[in-house]
Image 1 (tube, helix red, strand yellow):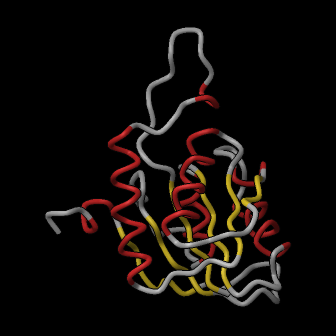
Image 2: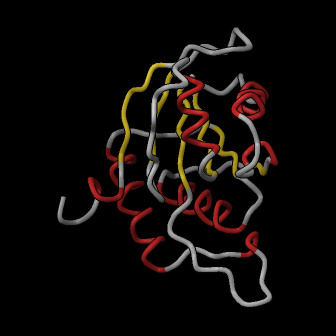
Length: 163
């Protein structure tokens, strides 16, 4: 299975009296995501399933991914992609969609870099998934602890118009 790991884009600060869960993407955050997703589209990325954290900035990120990657299916929301979740919970969510050949996950740090390290079976790997970054890891779904292979990572800096 191809697993696309997408960190949400740059989000606004928490408004006074507001909730972290309600933070929206900024215009800059949306543009940087579009740059990354445009590169992904050019590379042939076509997720069969998109799963998002239920927090607003991740849902908006998932919607931008769906639009940029011509995804017409349902965007699933999962608490397994909340920032304080565990790599094991994310893996169980991925396995729920095992009949798909590819899944895109939209979520947060520190969960996503932890999940990436866990997928690579290397807790000492330090991944720095910048806001709006997209990674692809390939893995078999047959075991409780996967052995993934990192295929690539696109950061907003690499995907930007000056790239």
